[in-house]
Image (cartoon, rainbow, N blue to C red; front, side, top):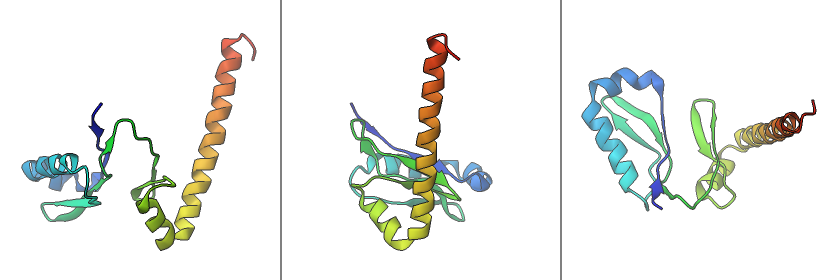
Length: 122
């Protein structure tokens, strides 16, 4: 098993990325190679942060990423990045938690619905 790197591309920077493809590819490759040091963004052309980076993690490591607003955040009780986000923006942290709780309820309801359907009950 290897490492996985999660990135989010801000689509409003697509033109800059398209105009600087080599720089973009090098930034992605550097992010994937970097399994120790955490870097949140890299610049492409004149755009300072068109790509949001998550630290590469081993395929056996689990975490949750939430896209909300114009960013993506890791929600992991063992992550210093999650702790930093909580300290920096507790209101945003609470909004993300509320969203996650709602999604878990909806997913459980979906599972129950599909199980009933599978069993022939509606």
